[in-house]
Amino acid sequence: MREHAGVSREELKQSAAVTVAVLLALGLLAAWNVLIPGVDAWENIVAAVIGSLRMTGPVAAAFAAWVALRKRRALRGRSLTTWRALKAPLAIVVVVLGSFGATVLVLAVKTVLTDQSGRLSLSGLGMGMAGLALYSVIGWVAGWVVPKAFTPPLAGLACYGLFSWLADDRGWADKLAPGTGEPYDLFQGLNGAPFFDQTIWLLGITAALLLGWAALVTRQALVLACALLSVLAAGMGVSRVLAQPKPAAAVDIAYSCQDWPITVCVHPGMRAGLTELGAAFTQIASRLAGTPAAFTRVEQRPLEEELKPSNGLAPIHVPDLSAGFAEEAAYEYIESLAARCPGTVADGYREIVMAWLRGEPLPGGPLPEHQYAASWFSWLSEHQRREWLRMFYSDFQNCGLSSMYFGGGGGGGAARVQEAPPVRPTPESSHVYPVYPEGEGTPNSAPSTSMAGLS
Image: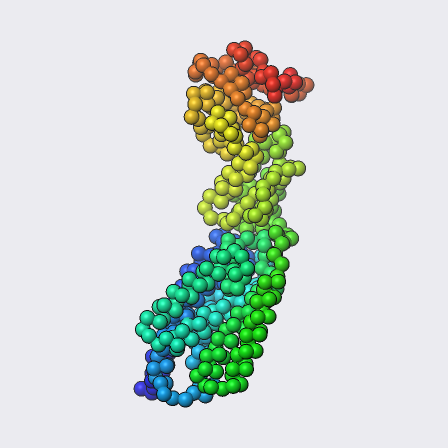
């Protein structure tokens, strides 16, 4: 069997094949965990494969360190030309980048076969490849400088810790690590300019490390000069990366909408969730009809944007399309209608209305008056509850609800639940509430504060 500098060619081929397989499997697993569930968008694919570098990069570094220490032991005492020195680490980079390309190809198969939104960011893929190259070169240099058995796993762990720390810094340092930032919001978009600047920085520092090592082992002044030029390129890349302004809160997109029974609009990559969102919000829209929060359009908004219902629009957050996404979006939206009330008593009444809006069983509450109010409210028909909310929405929103709004709130227990008068509004007097809250023991009297002027 022919030997290549003390390492058999067959062993190198087998190691490369195993490394590609491991990196492909690990890359797919890591990317799958980064993918936003249910989203059909090219940006989602690119963000996922870049996110997989946090796991595949350390493995690539460990593999490069293992080959480097084997090569150093085999070449001990021999002189190296520049090409002979660079051939092995460049071959490792090619192997690692091949696994990255295979990961992208596998994830893109479904994307190619379906109608995807957005576009494939080549600059993003280039940045991911430059990041993997940096991982590999760091591992190679570490394995050559410290040719010990513990070096490969240590190099992998060190790379994982360093780049995870950079990516999680959330300051200027996170721009130096290959990544898009997590969690990724589709409304943010993938801007090619930051990726291009990151690629310059990553390629510059990779070339500086590799050529600096080559200059050390070959004693070539020209190689050292090239390493210094690479340092300048890396410095330029860093300056461009740090000078990049913060991305806009959102980019303009062409929504995908469903117009019946209410209009529901989402990011085109999430159009598969339109039916469930429409079903969840149609009932909410019917219950809020006639109130200041009435809406006829539901619109997905960026995750960092505060939900502020207004002008017939219900803004919602949909991070992904995992199981229960529509219920979670509805829950968050309903919670935004009225802030939590200070004090147990007021908040208990708020929760009764909230549970009805969410379509959940009415809570008994921590106090007997809450239990009576829930029982009284459950006795009302759906039509009566909607009329009740139209009349007292401002009190509900401002934590002004009390026992006076729920049949008088107190004693009498279940027997008093049956006392709501069967009065229904007419077209001429639609402002009159069909079921009058009891006050001071009088069945047909309204509260004298915030309910005054309704009759």
